[in-house]
Length: 204
Ligand SMILES: [Zn+2]
Ligand SMILES: [Zn+2]
Image (cartoon, protein in one colour):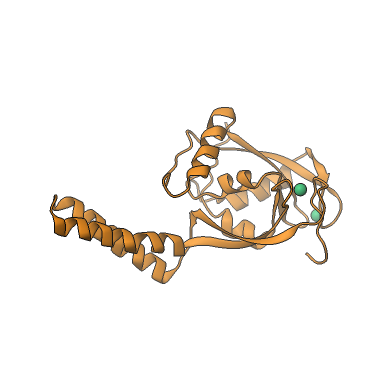
């Protein structure tokens, strides 16, 4: 997109913001090696019982694993609104962030969302910031209890997922199928849908 992109909610111009999402694994050779090495040391230190040598092995494992985990998480630059925290995902980010499975089939979240948008007959509340036509609205159902794999690393995400699990198991979003963009009115919704361990549930 070129020029100033206005927030669909009417807050004003949006800005490109670079964010790292710890809930999404991506390929990074050094990061993956560090994680693997760290994990081996950690498991090894637990198997061998207690003792000072094992403790240092455990700590050394953590020292490898944590930066590896950090390095191999996904970094993207997306249009964000500083006022309402809304986020726009464009084609490239949709592919990078929504690469996880939809209901365990050979269909990823990006494909699911794009097909749902194409099939949607429900108009969204706002106009597409790119082409100016009304966006389409979709509800994405999420599977089962929200699982959280790395609580200690992202405490605020855990809270969000728990809230979403109790309040609602669907994420509502708008998008433009022509411009291939998605509009999340809250950044948290985008983070939850993008996480590797968030799975879209089967249609009932
Ligand atoms: Zn806004
Ligand atoms: Zn559009």
